[in-house]
Image 1 (cartoon, one colour):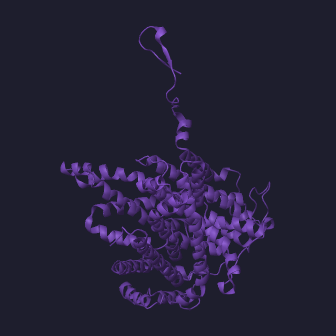
Image 2: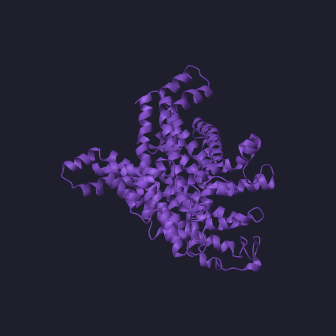
Image 3: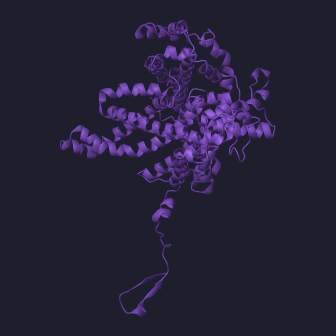
Length: 313
Length: 302
């Protein structure tokens, strides 16, 4: 068990190294001269030279790559061209809102999507099932910012139930904090809910066809324990896998949601960095989000051994 | 009622009750629609958008970039069907021309990502030594959230529709490669491939004749989903200022420009949002329908 966990943790190291290499190579693979693109049209040659030095484009690829890898290992993600602050400290300033938004969305999505998926599988072939699956298609199709604007318009502007935009740190109390996060989480969660509900339904359909479910029903076990204890537990592996893989959607969507709801998090940092063409910040953010994504999926892998005792390595 | 001729005289004819309800053969266009409702609906919505995109100049539009500052942020009405934006540009025209960008990006990314992914997947599935290298590389690419990968690429290049297509394709093709490799690995173990090898068929012919046709079904379905996701990604990129340049109207751009005023002038954001949602819905419906229709197991409810 411990050996398996350790081996899985070690196996993420090469993946992260490859991710770092890809992210680093983008700068060299981009067509044209990235330094002059980043500097913009009004830049003086000195500006371009300064940016080229900051990005290390004036030195050979391999030399620069090993320097940069050394920095990453020491936890240094580079320096912003625009503010001259280390990228790590910029990230630290902005991480709380994004973390809050992602966690609230994750919890909300799982709490909504799993019961919906179970319900659809239980009532398979009925109008309820079709309705839930149709909602899932809509959830996939309506982009996060569209849902965001509609929700903000309805519940904040027309009904005036919740704040329109902004973010309150959790230090100022749970209620003000969650109030600001309800609408963004629903908007961000839409596609995620659709994804999880779909996979829950199909995993549950597979499990419900098993003999032990028939046995459970035959011995007179009620519908709820059959569905949620016997079936859902055995359908957990694909569901948890999709929750982990869907984190990529969540991270990408957070960038947009934050700019719709004016949440000062990492997404806003990304958007600001794009507008200023502050590439080191973008590079640092991409790398950090990718590492988080790899780690989340590591946790998912490790959770398999708890969810399904048959999985032993 | 089914009449059976027993072969004797006419008096011996018996009226048998119907054993099962009469089969209504679903033929013709309507039958086809009844059999594949989501493909039909998807195609229908998509062809409306396509017509709008192709014939945009003749559908009551004006120059989508024409600025009229006197007439800015007019609500929807007779003169401006969808209203006008902060610079007095006609939103109806901008949205209709924006359809071109969205469809172009969606289709192009679907094609480019599928072709690149197909080639890499075939190589990976057939060439043992390349498999490890390619798949580790794909794992790395898939560990980067697609939107962020596209954002990083767009930050390094000048904003243009071509660059948007390349950036999103780069973010999408690893999943295709994975899918194709999976199909190749399972198909190459099939007896008919062994038979082909045993009868001396050359590898390229095996790939072309036996492997490739089996990858097409899943590939087409995947390409449809990629098309939908590319349209959303394009809108997101343009919305956060990393996509198509502001000079070319795209749905993401229009929404980005309406962002500052959306609380008082929601229509600027509303119309492109509706168009985007309907188009993506159409493509997703098409994908779901194709998946059910092309699934050889025919499990319609999965």
